[in-house]
Length: 275
Ligand code: PGA
Image 1 (cartoon, rainbow, N blue to C red):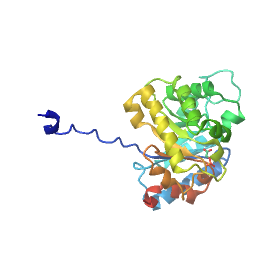
Image 2: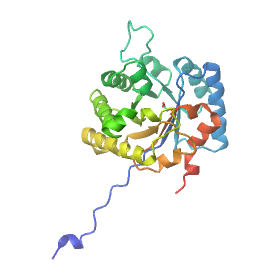
Image 3: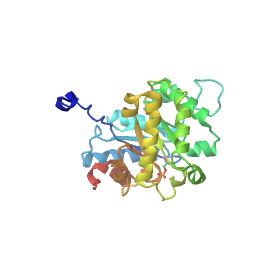
């Protein structure tokens, strides 16, 4: 007799719930006064919509010069919007003119730091090692690096969608402690600011490949809890289609994060998820 047939199935581990993150990368837009006005309006809009920040986390990534003002507003009004920075020095302190250290950002209650954005990889010659060191500086100071990876149009043609992002993530992980909390943003370079986003299927394919890297390098627990965002011409009309994908857990939004109503709608994607 086959014992296995009579045994009850072993209990399945419940699926891991990852809190989606909707992150607004302002890039070089808004001075500190505009930043305050924007965050105030965003908070009102989300309050009107009875937004549950525990269900969908919302973060803004203003330029360095705005961080202190936004921090003051968030803390005075007890607004549950998370604060992020767009870059960080890989160094702790010292003779690095123009750079900003992780400990300075931590003092401003910064929770997230974008590293490896394609505009820095491309425009400032940042390689995988620099990106990894910046991610490490953020993590060591108690913040969460948002590690951006993505292929150019030429990479896509030559290697397919996943190869370069997988390579970039693998390289960054070599600089990070095994238990460091990270967020990954898959941002195809050709989709950024182009109005031509990746299809949800392509983004999911890369999301799945990135999660497999985490599983191989860090084990199941890290792979299951790490959030992978999609970025590149994200907007309120398409965000829900990414969020339906099992391996995508949020969005890193550029242009559309500069319009309060649009960004607020993106954060409320659960209300416009269609089957
Ligand atoms: P985009 O930018 O939404 O304007 O395409 C995304 C990003 O660069 O993070």
